Image (cartoon, rainbow, N blue to C red; front, top):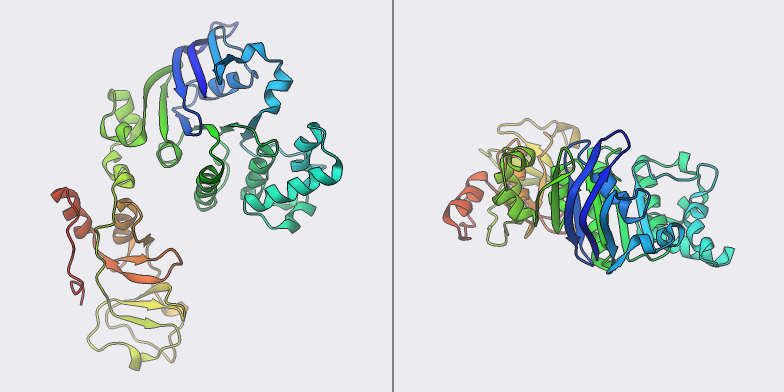
Length: 370
């Protein structure tokens, strides 16, 4: 557990970065600090490992004041992940991760063995270990940074905007990877971001900070979106917070209907007569795109004849994914798949809205889209 007790940080020039802030980060949870630039997020984070000392107040780790621990020793028990990963450019990936076990007295062979296991744990193939950081993509570098932070098996993990420098697709994958790892490891994670969507996705609790280092609200993400504490929080979480709240609404009662389908390699004779939009699947029944009404197929159907589909909704996942799938689809039909990406059916935005308006989860006719 991490506890901030009436923490204040004022610099020599009079700038106040954190103003009498108190909050508790429960053990084994992900807590996110979010807010605009200059609100004290990183300052708070760095107080935990004594990279920054508070002007007053106290930071406690598992009940003990961090100032009672020698900084180097304290930091060895705290994982730290930053933007751009902060890897040693002259060392291989494997040796970057093995640095921490070596500091703890492990031999070279044991440290490298542990490094290879950690790389696998964060989803990287073993051959990556022989490369240098410059030979990796941004997303791979960030995974290596997480692996290195986990190398000492620390109970606490500090993450300072670790995914902000990568593209949105890679960022989403890294977020999912963090949630997977947290499900396995149960660390106490303090995560800094300026992105409210990232905060809502990752945080079990979210602390919204405002300029001057004031704590505006500290709550679980669903409560934050449903009951913002004031106008600042309302503005920061966005006018579309109702849409974001769908991330916490169960979609298990949403019943997928059907739509005409064909497969890659089929010919015009295989397309249903008088069909509207037709969903195209591959040989493994995974969605590949759409054929518009009255489309003309030349020879066998190939992917370059398709219109790209929207996002896919995994059955049973939160309702936000179902609505996004419907709204992003050119046909207006959101495609539902199982965890392996296999087609299950389609849903409409109207279905999602009806569930929200009714406050319950009614079944929808299987034949609604025939």
